[in-house]
Amino acid sequence: MVHMDATALITVFFNAEIAEDARPLCSLRWRGRYHRRHIRVRRSSLDKSNADRHRLKRLTMPRALITGVTGQDGSYLAELLLEKGYDVTGLVRRASTENFARIEHLRDRLTLVQADLLDQLSLIDALERTQPDELYNLAAMSFVPSSWQQPVLTAEFDAIGVTRLLEAIRLVNRRIRFYQASSSEMFGQVREVPQTEATPFHPRSPYGVAKVYGHFITVNYRESYGLFACSGILFNHESPRRGREFVTRKISDGVARIKHGRARALALGNLDAQRDWGFAGDYVQAMWHMLQQTEPGDYVIATGEAHSVREFAELAFARAGLDCREFVREDPALRRPAEVDHLIGNSTKARTVLGWRPAVTFPQLVDMMVDADLAALGR
Ligand code: NAP
Ligand code: GDD
Image (tube, rainbow, N blue to C red; front, side):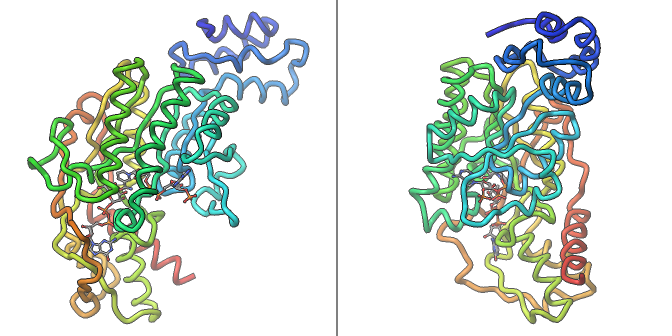
């Protein structure tokens, strides 16, 4: 591993003039994290053409690899990192049909590599090929009810998959900074209100149990091997890109269908469950901040406000000029074998250390989601 100032490194391998051109690029936050990729470029292959400048720029950009880039959070995080000047690669698993709707608008700026959390060698190969500075592990089976249908597969993805990624880092390059997408679902039957980084876990679903494993293996690799590995304990975060099976999107989509005459009612499960709901666009910023610190750590990311499913539905229907009581019916079949009744987070650590705070309020989030679904169905 080479440890040099970026400009000095480029000067060694290219001519001084190009190194001078590269100086502004080198002011990006590098913190001395350089990889073999910088040494692979042959001096003779460069002149001062635009193509070479572009190539040089890519070489000096910080690199991020995102697993789960096709998901809600992956798409927002990819946008954020591209805005910050990262070279972003998304890890995607093979499917018979492409599932790139959420990243369609980024396709020409993103590199995609195929790999799967179930396949150790594919992960090692992805890290070898992309040589990232930062690795964000967002891939998971993320829908809680499905984890009772497929508990073993859920553990393979959400628990052992994390170990596979950490092992890949250990083998390929221990300087890669790692973010693990942990979850407030780990608190489950909560031991204290609100929940902090110190609150003990009591998960209530196979998903929650698998996430507890993912959290602790991240902590363990930090302690065992000195990896810069962080666990973000994120409370529920939503957006117009949320999957339609999750309750907030199910409601905003249901409201839009009813408003446009495409449905007459909306069946929901437990209306009394309470969640601390924030906006996904705000939450991916916290992920990035965690990997920019001088020391790795674990952080609760939450708004500090809890609302019931009923409140979400009331606001959502009202946004479309409808009365929720006329359209929502409770279906006992949608209740869970073990429920998480009430989650509310205390994100003081993130606010103090990372300087993070959410921008979008609960009513703004509801309006944003309903407006987006009304507009999409009205097109
Ligand atoms: P999401 O929309 O369901 O996206 C999940 C992503 O994981 C998709 O890109 C999916 O790819 C990918 N994936 C699943 N299994 C994979 C595998 N075996 N190999 C490679 N990729 C795989 O989830 P999200 O809401 O963005 O959440 C992101 C992460 O944060 C998840 O780990 C979730 O558990 C966690 N989390 C979410 C919240 C929340 O409120 N959103 C809160 C706390 C924690 P396909 O497109 O191929 O299916
Ligand atoms: N999905 C769904 N569908 N949930 C319903 C419904 C319904 O028809 N009716 C009531 N709910 C209640 C659920 O019982 C739960 O208490 C609450 O709404 C939220 O459910 P989801 O939106 O499915 O989210 P979640 O809290 O189970 O899980 C999400 O947040 C976790 C963080 O706490 C997911 O994003 C997880 O991946 C994430 O880790």
